[in-house]
Image 1: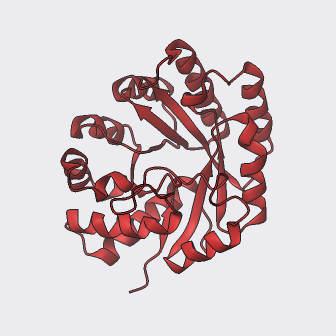
Image 2 (image 1 turned 135 degrees about the vertical axis):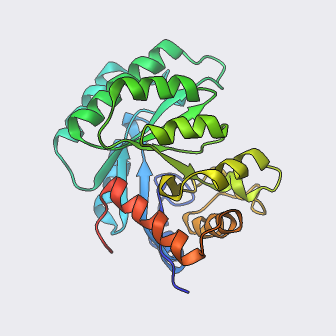
Length: 261
């Protein structure tokens, strides 16, 4: 059975992929991974992400200012982001990784919210979807998304909240990123949420090299392991594997407006 996947969230600009891109892409392709989206975490990473997206077929970039690096972000970085978006580069398919995080020691949350609002405004202006990070902030994030009402919406990546919180994002038109969390049998809440959501709301992701899958703890995550996430997802869902794979592939292609391989 030949199935095709999109890893909608892979930090391919970091080790172990940096300087080993061709080998890593070959491994991913052998597992059926057709496209990989690489989100930036800061303005300093924009050149690396752009370079990858321009050099390698099947790699696409997202540019954004990640909330975990809030202490580094400056107003001029928002200007740099807008300047890049104004070029309408087809290799840039989203704004991300952006969002909110209350898990850190000094969250500077008011600043996080201001950066998020500025980037949501850019997403609306440039008609791009967003790749969203949210830890302990689902309800606050949903409030910001309601306020901005993006036409292209986006994906809440690495989701680990309740069904009700997932449902509020889905009702706003957003997708839910399904990654390595569901490969852990003890993650009963996350597995139950993903089992209950409509299939049109699901995307696959790895967050590589982070979020290792069950059985791969202590090793860098990799984009080819999106196939393992998929097969665990199949064990939780009623759809036949080919039907589920095609649904999720089309969800990804439509949201990010990816070209057919």
